[in-house]
Length: 88
Image (cartoon, rainbow, N blue to C red; front, side, top):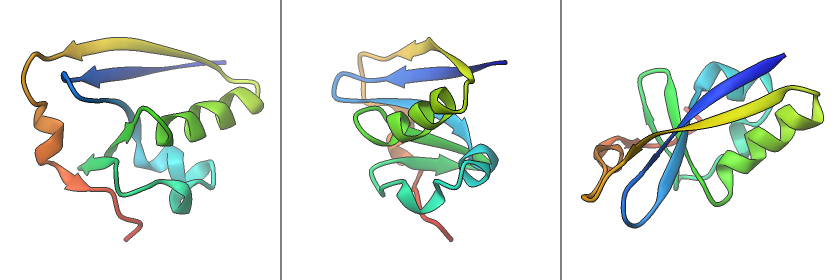
């Protein structure tokens, strides 16, 4: 099995877009920091720590993971205007 994710970045940081439902299914909802963002059913996991929690768990479960670069912005990403991640 293979799962694909999209990576977004601006000059300061990057995020990997993951469906919130997957984070719940992996039992990692309480492991995600408020440095990630959310909009609708998608969580934009900050690349330095939160994204690896999800990607490492998938690898541990035998899922092949592919991350495609979707957007590299020269300006501040609109992701920064989304809600901060929260468990609620």
